[in-house]
Each structure stands twice: as C-alpha cells, then as structure tokens.
Image (cartoon, rainbow, N blue to C red):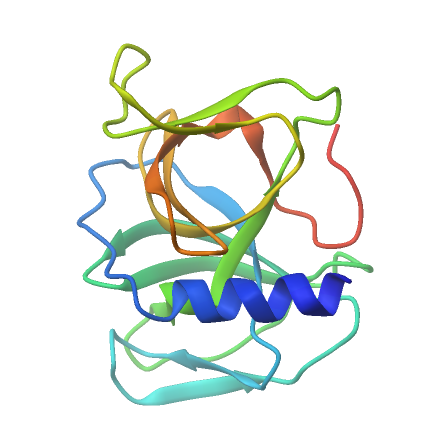
Amino acid sequence: MKKLLTMLLILCCATQTVARNNSDNSIDVFIIDDTPTNVREQPNGKIAGKLPVIDTGYIVELDECQKGWCSVIDIREAAEDKEIKIKSTTGKLWLHHSVLGFHTRNYGKQKITIRNKPQNNAPAVYSFNEEQSLCLLDFNDNWAKVKTWDSKHTGWIERKWVCENPLTTCP
C-alpha cells in the first residue's frame, strides 16, 4: 500500500511548479521517488550525487523553494537517522519538488483544511479527516503549500500537520 501511495505522490507532484518561498524557516519532508534521486548543485544544474532507492527512505530538511526546486540543508536515512553527505562545488544542494512529500498527522481524525492562501481565515479548498499523503510545493513560517495525491486539490495547510517520517507516525 505504501508503495502505491508513493507512486501516486510521484505522479501528482511531477507536474506542479513551486512558488518562491518567503521564509527563513526550514521544513522536514521525505523523498517519494521510487528511482534513484538526483541531487543537484543548483536548480536544474549539474548532478552532485544520486540517492539510491532504499526501503526505509530518506528524510530531507529544506530551507527554501523556488521555481520547482528546493534547497537542501540535510539528508538522512529515515530508519537510522544517518546523515548522507553529498559534496557540491556551489555549497548548496537542490531537489526537485516532484520527489518531496509527507504524511499528515491527524491521527485522531482531526479535520485538516487546505486553504487557498496561507491564512486561517482564507477560503477552504478541501477538507479531510483521514491521514493523507501530500506533495510539498512550498512552505513559509506556519504553512505548507501542498497538492493532494490525486492532483485534485492544491492549497495551504498549517505546518503543524506535517509528518516527515515515511516509516512511522510523528509525535
């Protein structure tokens, strides 16, 4: 089932463009790619390294997203929390947004509302009470821009609902 959800996340995320991030805060998500993942030295630039496919997956800390690419602070194996080191001549590493996703942490069936703007009073785009896997498109201080796996809904959710671990629930 997780492999099916991962495949659907890959399909839904592959076509979306990420807007410029306006935050200095970082966010943790996981890699949803089921093929070796290219890590680049700049957006759409030279490949600095490839992450092989592993059953446990990778957790990635990001510090900004722009034009479909997210800047990487840290990459680690999800099961062992082991840091993955990739050298870059530019000093930065980048991942395309289409390989990034997360699960929601509404384990008690709390209602999560996707909104058309990163504001609590913004109009609702979609709401759900079950845990979902979502594609990351962008983020700011308190919000993550997401797309549902079926690509039917795009908008913003509060970041408190983001669970970056592909293997287990988050506290």
